[in-house]
Length: 346
Image (tube, rainbow, N blue to C red; front, side):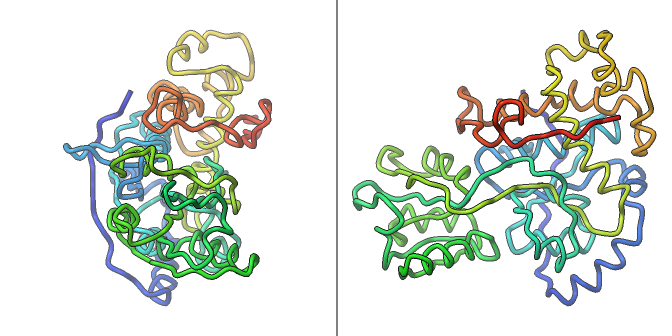
């Protein structure tokens, strides 16, 4: 299933951190949920094109794992998951865009870190995807481990945690490298594919898509074993609006809890008749959780019916039959040995 939506490929002008700080105060002073409702759509910042996570088709319709979490927020607010306008943001544009109020939420491969949480004035919802820094190399080069990259040219995006991670990884091992830093994602990947770089580094979850879709012969390329950093990807909002932060946070937990309770798009109507009080509370049959968040009490029903549980979303984009198949690993529920843990919705 893929939802069809209004699309927006707006870009933001580069802003200095000083300007970001000045505009953030103004942006934080408003009621985000009220503004979104009055506008009639959610403005969601996403990656311009990342296999499995976010990409528009030729008609401008967006799909992807992080795209679906934007749809989930819209479903909770409007009861209509399609009421989203997507704003494509580069790694350099993403933080000015959320700080200035150009977007309401960032769902764009953002790693939650202490400095971003404090210095940039962001609040992070619970992580929706756990990954780490990885490296893609050509098999013909005989590179089998990070140590074999000593003296290599490595392609990476600027303004990313990956850029700093690589510096730390190489320094810790006494290795040298030449960074090839390119902002545009297509140009970055092309630089690796055409041989300008010996390796491409990104979040490891992004590399299978590059290998499968952006290289002429995928079998000629391989990912180095191991994950070399912690990269908890989470949706981010501006500080200063607790109601909005609470809503985005609990939309995330709702997808986790829906999976834990066995709810799916396919069975949610049937499960609505369940006599299990946890399911009744989650779906708004009893209680007033929606009212507490400023939305309808059936907000989770709308999420699961129109977008799905976490399992639905993950399997749609990374399941074994998807173009970019990824094992769930840490992205499994806590009951299955993973890190996803939905707080009680009482």
